[in-house]
Length: 345
Image (cartoon, rainbow, N blue to C red; front, side, top):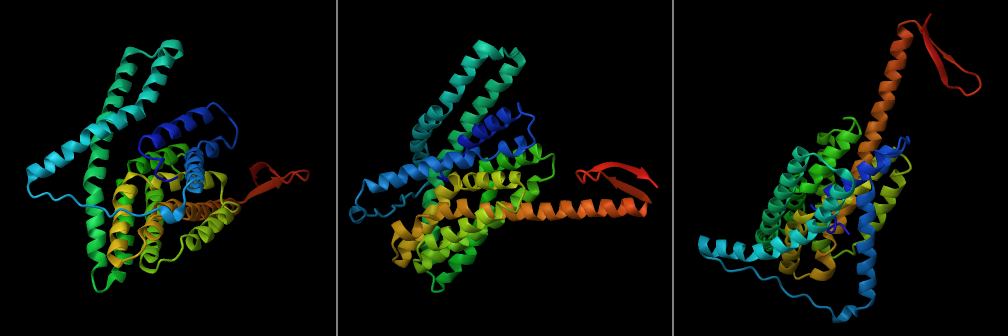
């Protein structure tokens, strides 16, 4: 569910949601522009669960990860070059429907000027080239690196160090997720700067660090993932009744956004390598790390919402005290207890 909402899905879906809600003048339209990414994560979760019903679990086995043996820079270059055709095709297939829909709308209704059209075409080219390079790098280069590091750290006599190292890696790696920057920018724009990119980034980093710490605990102990997911989602759903609606929608979007290609290509192999070195069950103990990464931002962002709510209440109280000190009187309407006017005494 988390992996499917990556660098292609998130920018387009979030922009489409913001565009649709911009047509409404409803008071909740700001909150409605978020949450679409979270809904897109539900379908894959249900689909894979149904797929699991079709397979007999005891028949499943894990094939050990193989790290390529590369001795020279020429070998490394050839290894990366071998991955380019795959991602050139995949990114083209991912962007093709978007380009096709835009072309149809441009012909039928948009009729954008040449200058705007050139900007969009150049942007699409940048997107295509950037995604090909990024996905080739993370899939071809990061997967072996993550697996190797996880295995080497787990082989240390004090393998408990996996927990703090995992938390540090999780704290910083979230900044490398391209979709996270899209989300943070969109949140700051739609909230008028009330929720800054810096605050969002800090909350997501803390949530990611907590997720990696818990995931490493699972790798070391073999505790079932349900002991973490069930309380985590209960807490997240409980917080949703206490914070503003917009923060709940942002939080559930953040879970899908934070669990992108960096998580799947580095952190998951990191956990797999550590689990193999420790002799654990990779299928049950290592997998699920993406689910943990998708869960903790739900709590972190909603806690940020509680802080924002408290801060807003304090500012309102401070403004009221300032008005009283300035000898102003607030006159209330007896019928609905709402402020009618504010005038000097």
